[in-house]
Length: 148
Image (cartoon, rainbow, N blue to C red):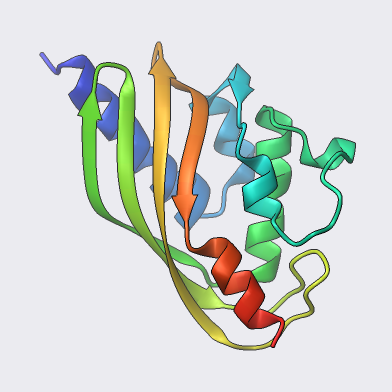
């Protein structure tokens, strides 16, 4: 029988594959709880554009918006889990995102540049669903470099 940590890590791998690499935004409901909270939404959109807009809320629907924006801006994005750990209900992943900036990211027009950045995601799980998200990311630095 799998431990809670092994089960949560398996769910995380599946989330990265299905939602992020296969870009199946519709599958988010299978992985993220209806009461999901993403307090880091402002870091994710991080362009100086106001994030109080209802499209950028910190819930599951807001997460769908963020993923759609990511896939539109980087349609060939590939996410690789470089390392993963779990303790209790939390799973940490260290991931590399790679792709081509082929579409706009909010106020930044497409540059055609190849990008690569790293993200540490910390997700809490309950009953096999993600209930919250915290991240440490190079994404803001990447966005600033795309403006040049």
